[in-house]
Length: 318
Length: 300
Image (cartoon, rainbow over the protein chains, first blue to last red):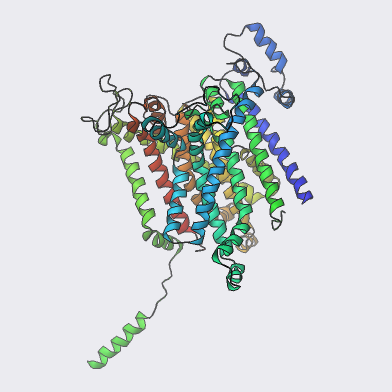
């Protein structure tokens, strides 16, 4: 177990380094001179020269990468061209907002998917199974940015019960889940964001529970006279680690992939920050946000993997 | 006379005995698909969408680019505009028909390109093994550290908008997963006895790969690629929605959804139409891909 943990963490290191290489390379993907990308268009020649020296753009690329990595490791991801604030501060402020709706979405998706997926697995091939399978296909096929717009049309335009966009008058400062006047802003983004994980978790729950139910020991449970509910409880407990792992990965995907939903709801998270950065070509913010999101995703995968191994001792990792 | 009838009767009985009809692989697949009505129905939907996109100039009642200040944001069924008009007074139906072209193009081209490139990389990695495998697959692992939306946005966001950049970004997003599928399949096949036998009988590497490996790798890669088409369509429309894909005024479902978003308080139903088109297309590709996977699964 500990050996596996150590190996798994070690394995994540080269991936994290690879992620930094890609994020570093992004600046070179952008058309034009990387220096001009990092400065506002009205920067003076002296400023450009200064930055060139500072960031070492006159040196070979590996040296530049190393310098960039050192700065990033010490928390200096550059300065936003738009707000002139440090990128790290901008991204971490936004990240907490993204986590709020991602966590809400994945929990909502899990509770629904768990109940429906288990029911479908118990009644494999019956109408209820078909309905659940249908819902999960719809969940993964629906363009969630469109679903967000449809929800706005229904709940904000037609019914007028929920706010369409934003995060309330105070923005993200002192956002609490305790007051309805703030929570109501998070409802539609959370529901919209939960659609894809709903479909995926439901599908894996159905598959995992159905697989366990096909085992011989289930027959034994029935033979010794357990009620069907008790049998199902055994099956679910066996399938749960796998389902929780899928849920964890989906959370990672949501945090990294919420850009479209946050843009629609102007929810001030990392996704919204990214889409603003794209519109204004704010390359430092773009680079910093992508770096942090990808590293979060690597960390989530690592934690999920380790937790799954800890929870389910049957998994023997090679 | 009687004897003859009797004889022929016996003969027919003999012939009618449960003859085992052995079908080939593709015949089995076709047979399974014939009775899979859901898959057939949605395959028909895809055919119709593709036909509509190809025959757009014949089908569209109006010029999709012709603007009109008078007829801006008209509701569904307003005069000749069957599905209403958009924020610049352009006919929605015509734009939706033409928009299918871009969405299908942006959905299919990256998947096909990535299937070829990723498949090749995967077969090379799987067949050669060793350091080459290590190099290719560890690089693939790094790309897996990005959620697909984030990777697509990262690449096309820094390179700037435009269709070409969008296509490149999406292709890069799909190469790693396809490479992984091809590598897994190749590694499995490579160690089977018949490949060993081919090598022992002196077959050159190229012909082993072409005749023995590729045939066994294509099916899983193809099935997986088909499931990516729906993802590609969703992602491509998403990029356009962010202003990173197709550029205005070209009709594209994602872009239409984005520009019409401002008008949801005026014409909510018209604004929902492009997304509905994306939804139907992506749903159809998803269900057909599911059907194909089931039909092509040899283990059933």
